[in-house]
Length: 295
Length: 267
Ligand SMILES: Nc1ncnc2c1ncn2[C@@H]1O[C@H](COP(=O)(O)OP(=O)(O)OP(=O)(O)O)[C@@H](O)[C@H]1O
Ligand SMILES: [Mg+2]
Image (spheres, chains in turn blue, red):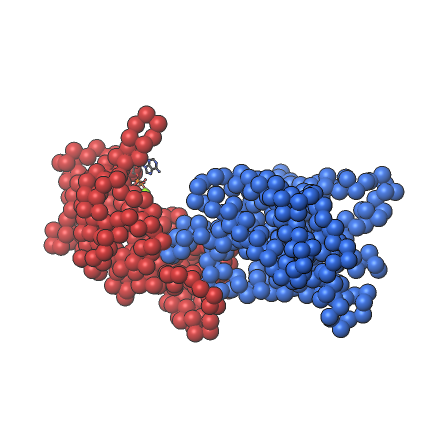
């Protein structure tokens, strides 16, 4: 039971990151690797601000803002200066690594005993204590999902979705697809950094290395969610990303708890995650090939 | 004057050579004029439309739309005056948006805000517009446009391109990818919508019969130059055979075009 609750808590907090990855990879079709840098950016900025006495809520919002700005940089690099998308993301990610060290002044910043936006919300909610953190995390994730769904139904949001599918058309109808890429990446990485900020508060520390593999974990969540829900609208797709995130975190907790018996160590997790993503990417191709051979 | 091109030159550099896609092309069109454009592959027709739309910018020359000099404006900043339909049905719609979401995208041509794109009033208007295409698309407004057939998609694209009543409509072989029945249908829809909207239209086509029977003026491009221009009386009395003879006299040895024309006259 406790395992399930923890999986859901983490699933929702990391789910914000999965929503961000959904926006860049699925909506914009932009392979944005900078999330590996913006996730710890959110964590380290929020942690430093909280340590220096900021309210955890203000610190989390500032972290989201910083993520948005950082990745407007990736977007500008790629759309205005024609740096390849992958490379632009990697450059931002590397720059953020150094920047995150500067922000914290050291590689790891503990937050034990400091105020946290997650636990503050949990205490405020009229819910028994065993479930309160889960409720707070769920509240954040579902609120973000609903806001996103609404945004994607506005004129601007619709144009952003169109820019991913057919940028020439967007231009023909009077919007600059480059601005749409920048805007989309800003929203995406704002969410990723917010996720980093909340995860740091939830787990009680920020670490420069906590971002390694974020993109793969996010993709795994998005893909797993899609495989289960097969979403046909944006609202279902964002829901699928959250569902995928919860399942993914659950799988990780199970692997950590019981994997030892099978000879796994926590350091094997990244390999396993990558294999899951790989399997999901390869499966449709293999299935297509098999079908063609049958026919 | 709703469109005015003055001395447009455009060349592309390829390894080892320069291709002059347009050399010193001038053209002006009155409001509501319907111009058909023919020419062999590589004659520069699409490049001409690209330059009007602002997707490409001329090396030399000026572009005026509705009396404004728009030469240096990028495509999205002249979209308000220009509607366009491409040859490839995939290009004119966003496949993972629904039919009505595509229409929502097309009905606004300026800055986008945070208003909801799909309102009840708009949906009503669109259902009307869709039902007039006579393809039962009004019943599929909530379906992804990627699920439509090529003909349906192209009809939707024509509707989208004309919906905001642009000054100029650019059609680039927009029925070429369709079977004859669908091509005729989309062409009829185009004529209806152009007639209502009163747009200046440039229509590129490879079908000489179409070029002759539609519109009030015919332009023939060859190797980046306007080789022939006929309008009014002269155009309406022109036959496909006359066109072929004219080409010969001007020394055009464009086999594809001539072959096509000769086949048409025989058939
Ligand atoms: N991006 C480009 N780079 C290099 N050359 C180009 C480019 N675009 C067009 N050209 C060249 O410019 C010339 C005119 O091309 P354009 O596409 O305008 O021809 P077209 O009349 O539309 O032909 P088609 O009937 O095949 O569509 C061609 O020789 C083409 O090879
Ligand atoms: Mg062409």
